Image (cartoon, rainbow over all chains, first blue to last red):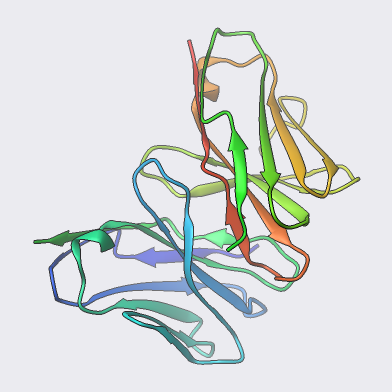
Length: 111
Length: 116
């Protein structure tokens, strides 16, 4: 099955700086890569996703890049704000198949 | 976005009792629903995948007789933890995938189960 690895496990950044989280996956057939944000005790919220027919996608301060050859994808958060503090999970899946989640990254934005 | 409602949000029960958790898609029909278990500061561990009108598919190591899943309609799936024990205490989260949005999963708010 699919194996997703996520790094780093914790990330502390100064407000206004950028944060980058990286994930690798094992199954070259995977073609859907979402990112979820989970605040303490809350539900995971989809923040951005990318499919394998594109290399980069951006939504305001959030961007995701995908390198299918290397089988890795990354989340970029620019101009971080305190409300960006949360746990972020990457995931990978094939069409019509289940999501495999990374272990999560706890992001802390220091004011 | 699509809304998934999960109830109850918190359950405290005695060892040996059964607990039922409901997951509803409120504004869309969910062809597939997923049940996850999440330990503190850990990732989401998929327990099972359920499709409306058919038997759930359980992940390796998940006891199907322990965690009963029913997906009776396109908007409702239930997870019943039978004869719960303290080791079943955890955060259980459901998600639903809409027919028109392949792969995209919308999550419920989760149920924190504490078994005394």
